[in-house]
Amino acid sequence: MNTGEIRQRIQEYVDQLSPERLLVAADFLAYLAEREDNDATEELLNIQGFKEAFAKAKNNVESGKVASVDQLKRKY
Image 1 (cartoon, helix red, strand yellow):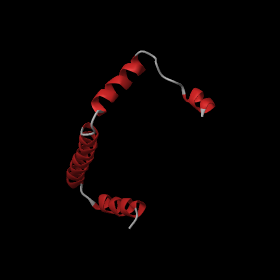
Image 2 (cartoon, one colour):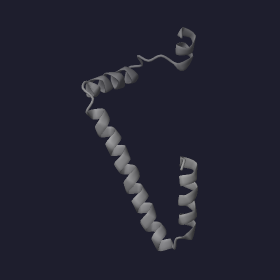
Image 3 (cartoon, one colour):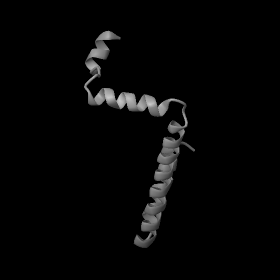
């Protein structure tokens, strides 16, 4: 089953739910989405040197040391 089919099946179930059960489903989906975000963040933070590289990149953006998309397109 592909993602589109799964989404369609979920929508069919959602359409059948009472308002009370919709709230439960919404809470559960919010929990899953938050958990996925947290897992992805944790995975990044476990990469050696990531925190330092991210801080440096953030500094570069704040100080304007960035290239625009147009500049990159011309260069590459």
